[in-house]
Length: 181
Image 1 (tube, rainbow, N blue to C red):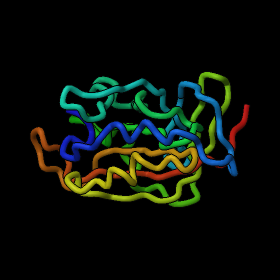
Image 2 (cartoon, rainbow, N blue to C red; image 1 turned 30 degrees about the vertical axis):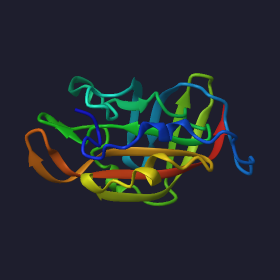
Image 3 (cartoon, rainbow, N blue to C red; image 1 turned 90 degrees about the vertical axis):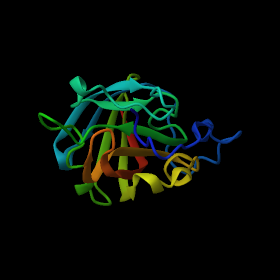
């Protein structure tokens, strides 16, 4: 079962605008992400591609790979216009997972994504939001193509059990501020 199973959002949001807006900030060419680093949380994790789950939502990494981050390959790569979406587990039955402490991030903290072209895209956290899974603001999360951005998403809130999992989604919003070779 994929992330946002209750949200039923329209994946066409990942198509973006017909023409990109002016480049008043860094914009990178497409390149597959390879590794995600969040220094404040001591996260340094490999990235695997995820697509859609059987129910049409964004898939998450398989439980055996719970310490890896999933990049939704139906959206932009980190540094392109639009929200590059990364998903990860908060925990499993055996303990903590890659995004366990995601809700502790604060504005101005950095997230880095190493890309296949040898560049590292540097993002700055704008905000960290908690949403009831039934009330995820899909256009805010997935539809902003005004600049290169990043969305990190995991589960949080109260454990409901069974197929429901946790009650909330935690979403980190971040904007591209720099890149380096």
